[in-house]
Length: 495
Image 1 (cartoon, rainbow, N blue to C red):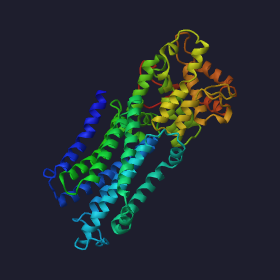
Image 2 (image 1 turned 135 degrees about the vertical axis):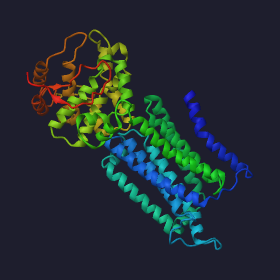
Image 3 (image 1 turned 90 degrees about the horizontal axis):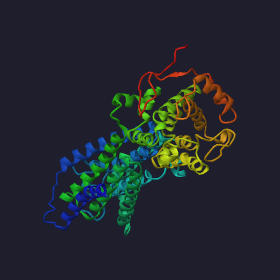
Image 4 (image 1 turned 180 degrees about the horizontal axis):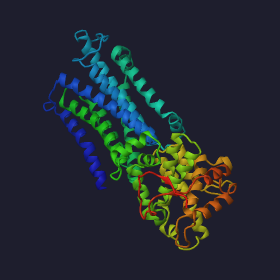
């Protein structure tokens, strides 16, 4: 409740201040800082564009659809800033003519008086739409279609917004005819506020569940955007309250950017290493870029809940990544298997400790409960924006080739390919790790078991590739807690 009160105070204070000024016109003085305004919004447009590209790049390279959608929300604000600056009386754009009903207003100012509110309302509505979509589970059919070509989606959206901005600047009369319809501006404002409210509420619920900084940032961004729309709809231009509207727009972009930085950057990983991981496919750099602070926190929590998983997720991801590279998979598939490997046991966080740490054989009821951990992990990951490939790994890594696995009893090629691949790495690490009831198996013994299970538990074609891989020397003892040994990975020297 304390966090909720802090959030509401920070979100509501600027809005209440602006509304108070609007209700007291004597205090809501005019501040016609035309030149300053032009420089300000021009600078903000450039910064917002750079941030949009940066956020989109992170979303694409880290394969997080929700982050990609937030970059589209940021792009929508770029249009607001651009039209804001280019249509201002100090700058002006050729082609704007005096509007009907405003015979005494110069052409530039007449165009500005129409272009600005239209761009502001449309931009806010589009931003609110993307914010709301960023809270929808990533396995939704609409989002899965959008995520098929993420780079193309961002580029096309930026081009579309550029065309819309040009239309508003050069022929504002056409847009003005639409906005002259009775109640249309109220309807657009109401739609934007409702979308923002939905985004804020869903993000707040998700943040309480997973504690990801970016989700909390979306709450602030959505509330400030809603407040900005309310101020714009009832306030007057060039007044103190109007400048507060600008501050709130800046806050929207800043909140998303700060939330993404806080969630992505980890203190144990140098920034240079993380950036390299976004652009190359070395295993250690892939792990550096693919494991954000938020994901690390989730895995740390899982390991604290189930001591057996300490280091297990990292090693499984590493073994799976080696097998994926040996299969000649694409860079995107390598990133997917890396994240899927790190997250594959996330559902154990929702398992009772008595079941996870049971020293003996599980009862039938406990085993039935244990079989649900892939589903629980899947539910967590779909709420965090991960793509279908990672979701398939998390849900299906305990399926068996013969159809006797869990949770969905998939068989053969009906099991997602990356899940089939990871299941070999998962079993290998389980066998070669020491447990309370048995010693760790040797590399040779574990591989003999995997060979025996080809066509029963495992994809036989993948088993052939796996058995050709040399044993891996991690150059460290199995970590007692979550560790990221970012160093060159090399095959063990022959005995």
